[in-house]
Length: 238
Image (tube, rainbow, N blue to C red; front, side, top):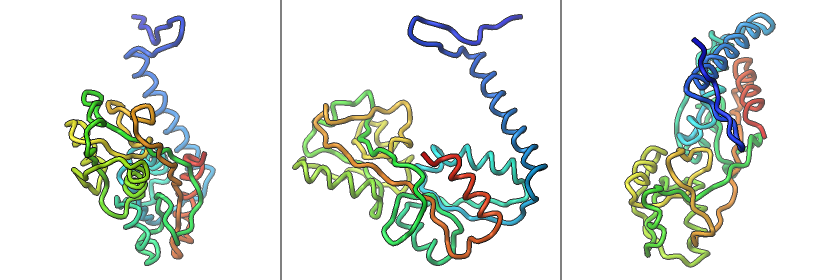
């Protein structure tokens, strides 16, 4: 029985449910092919790599590349530590981490992966909350670049605000936004599709870009770390 894989309109081509399933199978087949090819043409790599990454980057940026790396190098043990960028920095200095994908932190060198927009986010069902004064704000805990830049932008724009929620992870912020209790400054890559971005047209100040970098500890000069660093740079560098 034939199935339709996509529907075409005058403006776009959209995959059907069957098309989405086939696309998913195709992606997985390519991953397996790449892993098989890598196992033949690359030297066997063994060892352990500990990488640190904030929650909001882990799922949105690192998940695909870590999965692909694990398939290609099954004898490399990956340990992922989810912490805010400010907490990852001292761990790099102490060699408690091999690699870290984090927002640029002063004093920690790193290769620029991408520049990520910082945006205001709220629930689509509660868009009018941005009109409240003082403005209810949900932010990450102290040390977060998104927190510092967001609050500074409000202060510079002379918009009165109150901190209604603080969280170390992205899921805490998302739950508060879904409930319509606040708006939040978040990296655009970490914004779930069901939430809405606000901007200058809504009376909110423009936010700066975030530099996302890949940093390495002094003890990371080992083949497993080299291979993972290259995979991250190849996949994420823009």
